[in-house]
Length: 114
Length: 116
Figure 1 (cartoon, rainbow over the protein chains, first blue to last red):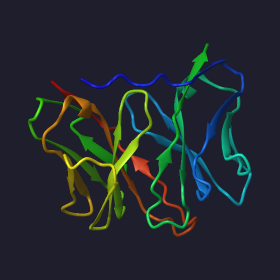
Figure 2: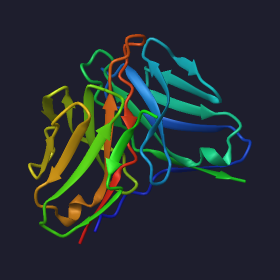
Figure 3: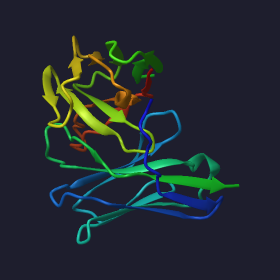
Figure 4: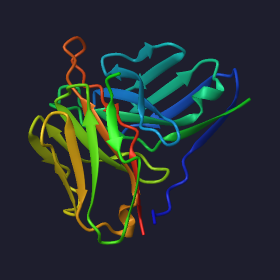
């Protein structure tokens, strides 16, 4: 069968609280970053992206922060809801590339307690 | 709705028996990707097509092949599946946005492959 998987880092939050998921990226040349949400049994779903010429971008209930100095990315989810429970992946790529091949980070499991 | 479709959603194959997974898209995107995702791990790119041009990742085993007969369809062939090939296989598509210049990838639901 399938090889034993790694244990994902887990963030457990109460419904209504704010969540912060962190990610360290590897390539200094990467200049475009995306956060994906993956629910159990489904493919990753785009949440929000940011280019390296920005350090913050806001969406609906989500904010992405980028710190290029330390190669760190974070996703903030405001007023976390049970439907936010999923695995969250950051991905890095090169904006000017021909096809934007993604390199995914490890992933964080967000567990929202009602 | 425009989407990325993967069939079957669950596939069981025997050790060493060739298996083909399929992906189709109604988005008319020119780039299609295949990823392998093992339990509790991130998706790992196997290869991608830019139009008809095939681009293999350096560490993708020769056991994995792909075909793209037209824009809409892409197949993943595993010539001799081993137990270590059991995983979720994700197909994705993208096209460069004329507005943003980015390639947003749209993922299918995946095919979970079991090797017995």
